[in-house]
Image 1 (cartoon, one colour):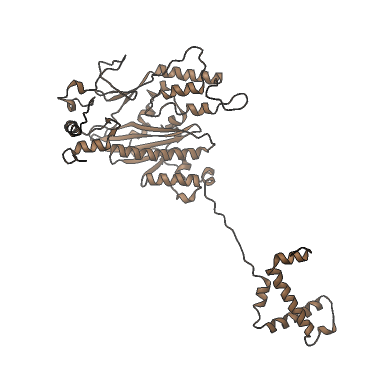
Image 2 (cartoon, one colour):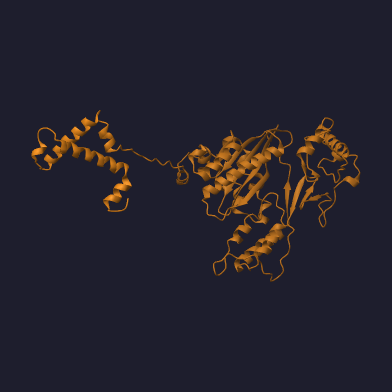
Length: 455
């Protein structure tokens, strides 16, 4: 921060492109690369930091540097036309050709060795897999295995014979594959248009996303190249495939954010999924769906605001290789994985047609259900009846007349129940009103007295 005004290129690289004690950065042309290298050396030297092990796919950027500060060495037991290589984190980089070589250096299995979950996990841990191509599904399948007593296998219990045979076959495929060659030139020189296409998919074993860069140069030539991918093991708790597809879509949205932050480029983005159910969820308001779907749809809509979500046929979805898995010896020449679907290099009118919206059962199953409670408040009879009269005297006299008519309807004829109201009739009417009020106000006491209980 103290030297940023004197070394603007170096300041940006140090603040944004330093991982631990490594500076991993780049620029757009050779002249700027040379200036960046010189600024980094001079600025960090002021703090007592000496940068060493320099490497670049642009030889002119390293001109004038002593060989003691260069990182170009040959890897043990590996030569390719004397092409120098740099090894870091188990990955081999050839600066001259700007390719990565991902080597499968895994422990050999001794003859007759009994495989356990602990042993398999130790082998998986030796695989440095920056693109998430292998290893993501293996431990989930092993974790579900049970013994004869239907108990989950322990760490050091032998695996079933069939599982051991399958693992030995997979282990052999790794050894036969030896290495993967990955070109890192993902954008055409002099590109006038750069787009990011992110595909997602899911299965009951795993879900993931992969990002492709589509670039067009001044001559109209189009190239598509895999940039990065990400995967995650599906949870053991039973989830529907549409829900897992939604988790994959959220991973695609998060992956696009990471790519944009890393490349620092303005790119048009398109997201692809083979689930029409997920597309319906994403295009509706989050409040339309249940909590599980609503939370993930809200996250996706925030990360991919104003971006396009499209449908891709399942067989043309490269993310299907993440969710279903693929043998290591098949990945090197898999064009769908490294370059995406063939139509992505064509004009937009040749891209897959979008299916018409349809209301599938999986869509409606996740719809938020509104429960309507209908209630009606019934006013107490005594309150309603008393409110009809303006004076207590009128209330008593009218009630007494009602009692007379009630007796007549029952066939009871009494001499005192004709002509003017008697004092006894008014007294009975008053007692009747009091009883009505007591039944409503003193409910518990009335029930107890009626059942000869203690009040």
